Length: 273
Image (cartoon, rainbow, N blue to C red):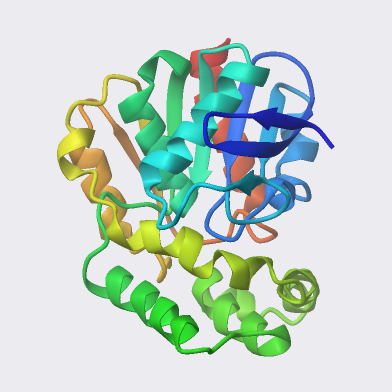
């Protein structure tokens, strides 16, 4: 199991493919394996790909006192890039991973050729605040979600109604989600990783970003509403905003990866060719 000793964490990572570097940053609760099924088989043909467990999940170990901040997660990502990649790299993040890659662009632009951030925002307000804080407070009171209750709860956040109603696709996604939610990974991450999703505010700092940024939003994303992505793109000088119809927060996993993977590759090609 490859490990990197960073400034605050011992980070478990995986690397595959060859060529210039793309670093994939998972959302809250995601691990190095989050990209294995739907992204790596495609991208390994073109690039060297680095995935990793963020602090608070998987086998990455961090003894720093909580609460952690998005800056802490960005520091881990930068430590990993410096240790096992050849900067500048393209960094791709989804959900909280989007906030992390945005923070890497803020703090360590020297490591970044371009940022691709998906299902993201610059600050948590309104619905995104209420939803995440309700989950956090419920866990603090001893609640948890397991098995099919977790699958049905989160699937409604991840996928559009047409996917949930697809009698061929839904059983496949259900099985994949159930395998994940039978572990403690999601529950372990709830406060450690979800809290910085709620408390971060990058609005002022994003106006100073100097690296190219592409913001991808999904019009049926009820977890990170498209308006939040629009705000990120409006704040970052020269950022490009891309809105995808008929997709939800996690459509990149098993629903429209055949559309999104080539799109991301075309963006990466601009900066890594």
